[in-house]
Image (tube, rainbow, N blue to C red; front, side, top):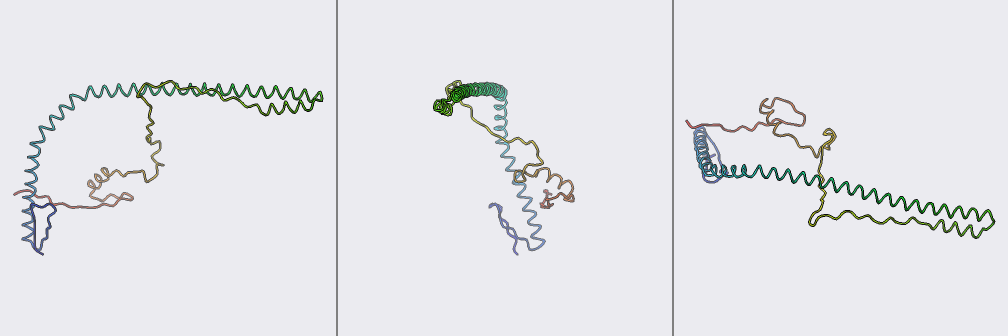
Amino acid sequence: KEYEVNLVIAGATVAIANHEQYEAANSDLTAIKGKIKELDDMRKAITRPIDEGKRRIMDLFRYPLDRLENAKAAISKAMIAWDQEQERKRQELQARLQREADEKARKEQERLAARAAKAAEKGQTEKAEALLEQAAEVVAATAPVIQAPPKPKGQAIVDNWKAEIVDVNIVPREYMIPDMVSLNKIMKATKGKINIPGVKAVNEPFISNRAA
């Protein structure tokens, strides 16, 4: 096979047929790495001042922005706590009013049933039946709906569900992400000699050469 290399087009095709071509390939590789370093140094010379300027700007705004974010979080937390407490009280009041309505209906049923029993004792069968029918028709009134306090204009509480791990040992496998950083480090440190269940050591050699 004939050795070919294109230094201009990325992904150039390379084929080596003999040792001379291998040596030539090594020279080209050294030249390419040198050119990469040269271009990278030029890029850094241009971008480093930009990066430094951006860093200074970020530092200038970081403190006040952090303070404002902390204040925003504190106020939001307090407002949500207040809203939740008001909703708890509203629901509690709503439930109490409904219980009172239910109790009132129950007492009315008992009153009519007692009258029906007395009528039956006196032999007033028709009256007793009519009273029992009235008792059966008594239905608890629906308590008036207690409205929540009005929200400020433009403000709304939006649900924000998120996951919190409580037992990592029972989390379904499909939600587990392998720690590739740690796995690669331990494979490099042990040269792939360590045995980790479900993991295969893969060696991907690369050429390391320096200019003479």
